[in-house]
Image (cartoon, rainbow, N blue to C red):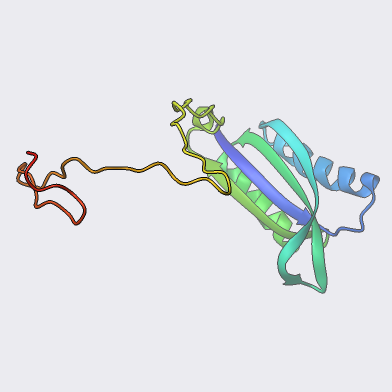
Amino acid sequence: MRSYEMLFITKPDYDEEKVASVVSRYTDLITNANGTVKSAEKWGKRRLAYEINDLREGLYILVNFQAESQAASEMDRLMKIDQDIVRHMISRIEHPERRVPQKAAQKPKTEEVRVEPGETAPAVKVVREATLEGGASEPKAGEEKGAQ
């Protein structure tokens, strides 16, 4: 069995019962095809990127499931002709264990220099700038030439 993620958009004016019947229609299709539904969550009403069938908003629903490829292709076929579905997308997840967001590694915080209004910024002096060959470069304007 393969892991899939299905995102579909319904009309925004549907009530809870109508949305539940649409979701159950496709989750039943998955279970009847010997698949398993991992999760089905309603993301809520969101603005569409562009107008579709005179709609500016849609109700987004995300379903994660495991099934054979025939079940996914059958759901794709049925969603194309379903009047309750505005748009849909079924994606195969290659490595579902990697899809879980990991906590970002804690980077050591670098010390920021903050200058309050009315204060002057601390002076910074460049001691030496290395070139690609590894030797010292010519001193910049404002640097001393003799101290090397």
